[in-house]
Amino acid sequence: MQWVGSLVATFVLALLLIPMVAAVASVFVLGAVNWLFSRAPSIARTGFYCPYSKRWVTTGFLTEAGAGQPADVLSCSRFEDEHAVTCGKKCVTLATSGWSASCMEPRYALLSGDVAYRPVAGAAR
Image (tube, one colour):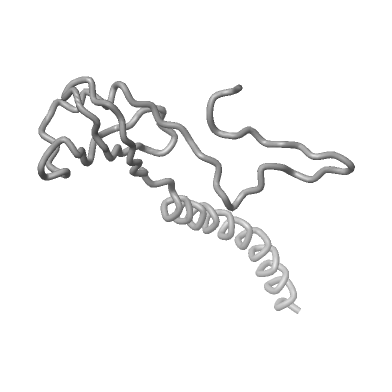
């Protein structure tokens, strides 16, 4: 009859330990998923009139995810070797960056009898 007490104690211990182990494991799993799928910086190429070199250039800007301004100039057509940017990179302060909606997401959501549009990138018109 003593085995019944042991069985009940094991069952109660399992009921207490399994949720705690699952909670700790989920923190580690969610942390790993966040690390794997974190937003990476993006590279955007644009052409503009450079006020410093006084000519039209095509430049590749590096922008961190969510930033409103580029972080660095990766390439510029002003130089013979486009990737060897040797100027002061002052054009970074003149440039702004924004977001663009993914083509995988619809611009609207169908509601019961109506349509709700989500905001689109760019200035309001």
